[in-house]
Image 1: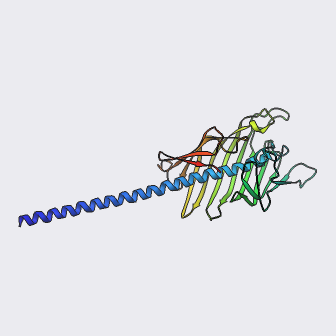
Image 2 (image 1 turned 90 degrees about the vertical axis):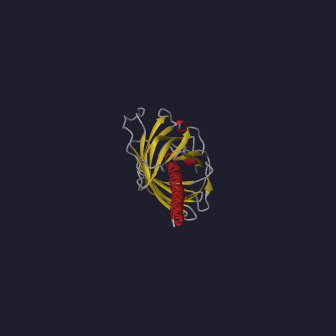
Image 3 (image 1 turned 135 degrees about the vertical axis):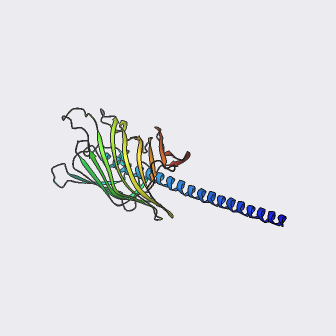
Length: 300
């Protein structure tokens, strides 16, 4: 009887140990799957932030680059001579120069700009004054507009918040508040990025020259968005940690970092993503680091 009792006790202990081991394995597998989902959500959020920042940053360059009557001239799609797009200028209070409406029509069949991207549709910008004048505002909307296969929607608003100076004197600073409202980038497969942003763009070099190609700007501010990619739908908040640096002779942001955190998580969440645009070299590469793991991405 004693031997039988010892056997039953041993079997009970073995069963309990096996159950605990199985439960532990299940928890590890569950945690591993959850970690993979968190990493994917963080990566997709940060990638979406970089894509939206790049495309709408191009809107700023285009609005500024139409000509030197409304901006600087020669930036964005106007950076090199090309037949794309057709530009129509309308002055509702002619002969007054402003307000002015500038329609950029890339056509229904589209065309390839100097940056190598295909565009089609229309971009409409209305200016209250030349953008270099403090207080000037430019509001851009889109009509059937695509960059490559991405349908671009929303309202892009630039306000010159520079310090007013005496006419004819060199500017003390040049600064713009740039707001994107109800921005949306939609892919052919139904995936999308919904994006709202408020940034300050300040010129840090090139103020004393008339040519825009030596101008360098820093970008500061924050944004929020939602991305759908396949079965994944996630919201996120982003803040610029190190100012983004852009120059008109490079079509990508070349320096700066952006921290992206999924909605409903804390800023101390280990799954936050840090997007690093590089060390100043003009290229289309950036690195996203999540929980110590780095992923290189290609900017549009």
